[in-house]
Length: 351
Image 1 (tube, rainbow, N blue to C red):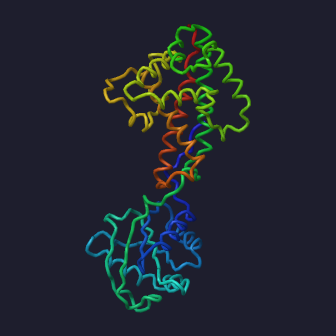
Image 2: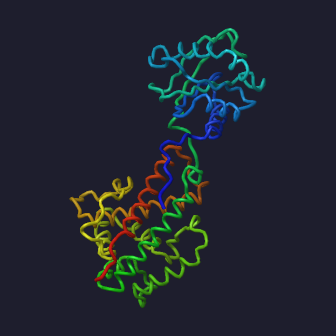
Image 3: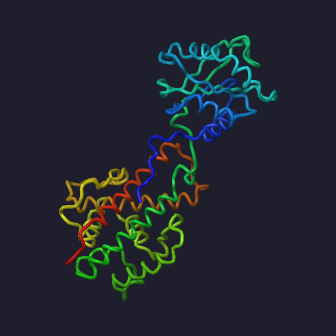
């Protein structure tokens, strides 16, 4: 299983429209400008956004020509854009007569090259409700600011769950191979993840129990390891990684690398997640490839399980920018998929 790429996907018009409705309702300005970068067909995107804003005093315009490239002329360019789109503005900016707040959405090929612009400007005489007046206009770039909750579609939590479940399966298969051939290879890792209730259990018995529990999972897209229950391999790794300081993670990684019997010739094409880099031990020298791969596994499993669980309780957490949510999820999914591929292509362990 490979993660679904998101690089060429555009924020759905409905999501942008919802953000604009919320910002317009909270705005203290008579006229707001919302800039947004669109990589696909801007005319089609503008039409769709406008449809989702029906009934609201908002006009969606496409920025054409060479405009908005001089900080001193931004508001002049804004008025010129309004003049070029008089018919659209007159049609859509009437809106609810009970409100004096209006907005213009500017769809462009690029992001706005300046910080938020706020300045008074004299509007054209024909401009609905505000024509000929000196109005305070704010232009804000929303390209990186449209936010969504952690359980939003863009987080692809169902894919994260599926990929985590699949990775755990590949890890179990490899660990059972090694355990069957040479128990001593996995002893250190078992010492790290076993609990008091496992005192009289073997690592092999634990792995068999995990396999039994996995057979009861009917929908991997909803798979959520539980640290408290500890009846899955991912839950044990998650719990241990949570309580391990970054400078001690190396010992756990070496133990996992040995338990998986990772070869010296490990395929170097696997993806190293951003979180693995950010949680790199402070005194980390150049680790061997096996420890680096195992450390990547540990930190990615930790971050994945944390995100899956946080998404299940999204109402308790803030919303975050859509690009951040999407790229974080994609990075984790790519790492999970690559790690599984690397494990299942290893030669069978023979002891």
